[in-house]
Image (cartoon, rainbow, N blue to C red; front, side):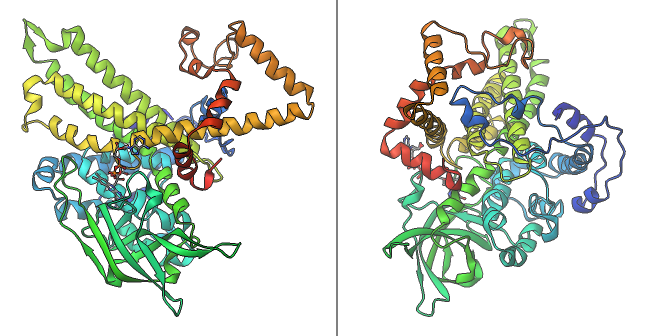
Length: 541
Ligand SMILES: Cc1cc2nc3c(=O)[nH]c(=O)nc-3n(C[C@H](O)[C@H](O)[C@H](O)COP(=O)(O)OP(=O)(O)OC[C@H]3O[C@@H](n4cnc5c(N)ncnc54)[C@H](O)[C@@H]3O)c2cc1C
């Protein structure tokens, strides 16, 4: 998708209060050239294959395209949301009062933004991942709103969407999609942050086996002060096939109305101050057995799948924020004079704009590539790609906001300008939805685990006397010893990148000999190994 074209097109669409009906009856105002969406299921291993030194060109060249109809639909959603955020969202007030005013929340609900990915049959907008990412570019302009909406739908109700039963979906999704009910995701506990598998909250089955009694405490819960519905993770007793009893994690849909739930005071935070974050405690909270999401004992996979499926949007959110910063700071740099020149004439100031533009471009490219992959048929596992987007975008965002603030000099450091707020707001991105340290381990170890498995298979083949595999491995080893250049098919006659990039293509970083890659997964330490396996959720391996 050509995102610049998309942005340009979005500007031609009129504002309408009720987005849902707008989109459904979108008029075909724009004449677009024919665009196609590739419909083949992806091979599921784009990022993982990089660890084998393979680049699946077909996955990213040409860049995932979307159809005309979807493009028009995106436009019909983008324009009113952009208008609402520009004209009706007062981010300074939200930050100062540490609260999103009710009228702003109502406006977001009217725009359908509480049900972006909830299917239309349950009253949501039913948008694809690509469309969700595009809206994320605008929603991210206010960090508090972005986190409130993400806590509700990217994690709060996502469990019902991806692992809930038909009954659960029909019962809960309509009110969540309209925003009548707000959702939260309750995983973290005082003793269990990054090590999410160590949670202690307990759910004990009643004697009549109809209800679980929930006991324990969750901390840092976004929307925790007012959420009507929560996805809660707790330990339950499970009898294994071998008859041995084990404590395993189960996911539950918990209504505040069930009783026994108390919320603590909102945390006084550095940034995203308008989002509500607090402790939520469960004291003999009765949860009907039919409110288990997925299988009893299968809750950890549900949690990881929820988190893995939402992270990709941090790329488009980050690029949306940076593009806004470029717009704001460019105006200043073009008019502020020092040493008889505009700031924009100084090389070191120009470099800051280059850094911002470069980061926005990469984030946008990564996010929409991943979203495009996720939108293909089947149940694509893009958890590794999404983790890469999250790590890059959160760190890039932090650097870029700091650079933007620097362009303003002293003014940037004051509350008269929004830069200090952007700086405070975006700092959280390196911490939640999996800290960047944990995600780095997840990316590296999952990739190596994948490569290790494939190479172990090759070794088995060699041991069985498969001469072809033996020659292939020997050839590679010999080639590497002679300093051979690995041909990834990116350059040359059939190449897909500009010849000028041949020598410094980022993919050359993946040229390490396959044998060396294998040694690492086989010797990975136990803790890191657990992270790779656990965070993989159901896609492990
Ligand atoms: C504003 C906010 C909103 C949140 N919203 C929610 C929510 O809605 N629901 C929810 O369940 N949780 C939520 N969280 C919790 C969040 O997911 C956790 O804070 C996060 O997972 C980290 O856990 P921790 O804070 O306990 O840090 P710790 O796990 O104690 O980690 C502290 C530091 O050590 C590092 N570290 C830990 N282990 C390792 C290791 N093995 N190797 C190297 N470094 C390591 C971490 O990366 C981090 O830098 C929220 C947090 C905040 C601040």
